[in-house]
Length: 315
Image (tube, helix red, strand yellow):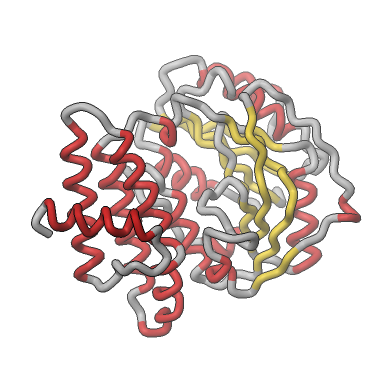
């Protein structure tokens, strides 16, 4: 069995896909499998995947009709055999020592979760950084949920700067059919209080792909999907033993999630703008009803705008 399962969801990324897979196959650590889930691509992505599968037996190509990123990851996870799981988006890339560093770190500290940083890329830049493994300074946390999403010890929402022990995420699934699915998944993982090691290394090359979900034009569905994710997190925290975590989320994570939605609504244009504000106001009203909306953790001017929205839409 391979030590690591690298999961790569693929959808119309012919421009970036070869760089992504080459960065994996060039790793200094070789005991891994690459599970590529082709999510109904309509460009040349399938041909590129088949070429890589033919030249390297560690690459497995699976296909499904287009169901979205969450479903692609979920289906690939069902096939994963590695002791550890690594998610990699197909328009990104990783530095040559990435798998070696995170795997050895996990073993050294007995970690369930290893987190690291990323650098922005143009999608053409080839991974070439070299790290002195002996000089890596790691931070260890037994309660990573309380690291939050802000401050110097923050743990970002994304799943592609993390290395998971497969047992940790067994039974966890990404919410199907929504965008911005990473943050509810991350909260579900952190809520398990995994032993977590954070490395101050930029091991991941993030590509600003203007065709990706995160860079799409603001739409009402995006606000609705944010709301779905927020309510999913609140459902996870709706237990007496998670009272401290709920209060922390209220003051740390929720303000950031609402800020992202507010900015998307502000950037919207056209006939859908009013609908987006209405959906956002409905979410704010639901949070208010659940006693999750307060000034704490928010920019006060923005919080005042939330109150004005509630009043405007009669909520």
